[in-house]
Amino acid sequence: MRIAPILLIFNPISYMDRKEFMNLLGFSVGSLVVASCLGACSKESGVSPSNVDFTLDLTDGANAALKSNGGSLVKNGVIVGRTTTGAYIAVAAACTHEQTTVQYQPNNKRFFCPNHGATFAESGAVTGGPATRALTQYKTELSGNSLRIFS
Image 1 (cartoon, rainbow, N blue to C red):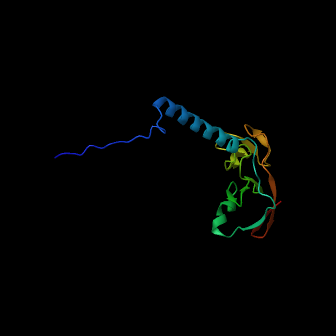
Image 2: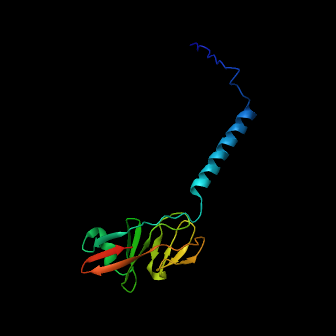
Image 3: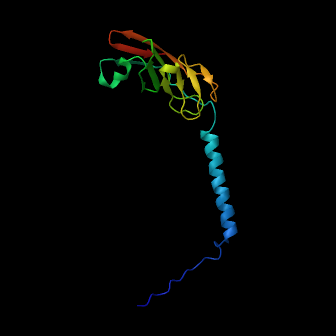
């Protein structure tokens, strides 16, 4: 069996050597990394939900986490928690450092960012960096089985 030879035709105008190609590739990748960091790596660029006003039905199974002390859930960009003493609290869910969703740690009475380890008090105040700006705190109001979260 015979295989026909494959001919490669190069346009001499667009031909570059390996060193030129690697330099161009390195420059392109470096440019993308810098552009990405300038747009996405900026610190303290957090956006908290504004005009927050929603109600959670505590009898709804989707909100079951709030039936027990220490439970929490995220809704509309807000993390709503029930403290170990039974009070309801609400803060912006996105860490002010790099926008990772924070976790409520009721036994430590804080919110924790799993991305870089920032910590916040139940009021949203920064207790440990790298974040330097507090989480926005929202008001809560319980009426029967309805929990209102608002600005």
